[in-house]
Length: 274
Image: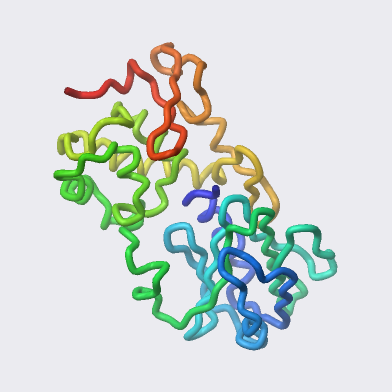
């Protein structure tokens, strides 16, 4: 699933192409996504100029005035910039055509993504009302992490992936941040010291920032808005490296499941504190 760095990479690559551009056509080839694509969207969007193209958590937000178009890439979706002359292929579900003959094309083989419209502001929208702070914002820091973790008996890996605590720290980046912090993924969140929360919050910001610079992580099918893969997978310390030696100490990386998600860690560098 595209995580925060991948979604931010898509946003950054498409922003200058769509902002200030006027929509002249919306073509819906397949409406059966996670939520059905409204057949009213063409009427709502046609003739509108895109005012902004932003991100909240793993959602992309296209503002056309008082109305927002919300995108989510699901498990394997992509949002790519193509020419209007390029015919849609299998799993291309929606085209948004602009006055310069560019086309924003939504591709989603598994159809777990979404495209929905909503009136601004979105603070109380069902998709956003329970979201925690952005991990790269000042609202997310060691004090926030420490306060929110008090009394929590859940594993810190699962705690980090709870969007009510902090948004966008998906599986790959939770694994990497915990390794770089020297914290075992099974460590109970409420047992972390303030110093551990301080290190972890800093590493989360560092890992996500570096991943964005590298264009995200492509393990299977992620591509950015221009159809290019990310390169952060070349910098991964633990994710996907089970039965390979730790790049720091040489101990074999191990794999387990926490919260139904594959979890990778070094048993030497990330010992559970007792």
